Length: 271
Image (cartoon, rainbow, N blue to C red; front, side, top):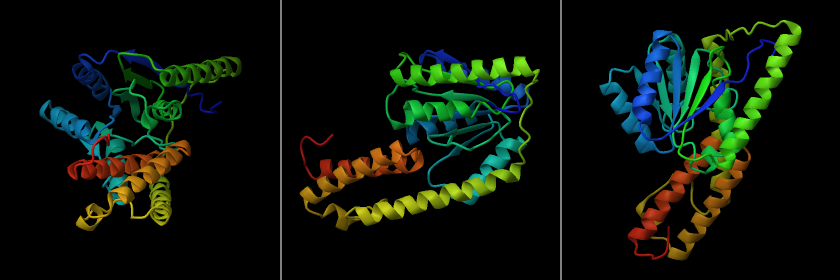
């Protein structure tokens, strides 16, 4: 129950076909109301391509990628709230505790692609990013409804109904959050420190540092590389299970790079 009376957002499922044009239309509606939009994708390439397409379409948009340091993240999020641009695209920019009251729409692309970034927990957190605005909505673009989607939507509806009943009983009129733009700085610093600490721990537990790809790494025995992939995969699952989705995404990219190197070395059956 929120004292502000804000209810969880309405969740709408839309088909993947025509999703970009549909999203452009939804963005136009929000920008005319001086509201902001968050868009989450599954891959770096899609995030980059979507950003380029939106720029060409006249949308004021930014892409928040994993290499952006904490200070720049603070600047980007502050600029979003201040209205210097209207749309922020990223792979995992929707962690718990990220309050952006100006955001009235969260768009989840490829919502039906199962994985830790589209798990029930991750979807619930993502949906919650639109719960800071009285007009908040979440649009899931998907051709199928996965179990994770259904559980996340059911939980959101349960919370929504509970809050609506509370508001009605106590005469609460939902009020938008008025969080100061500077308030996000401390949260982002904590997030960065947390990820750094987790990565340091991962380095100690694996036979090679996470995020380091050199010729010497490629020259390691094939069995050792396979063992490293197995170790990092276990760490990725553990990180996702503990809701450390930023770390999990970085580990996923590390694993993919190692597998590419193994394929280049002629190892068959590595997928």
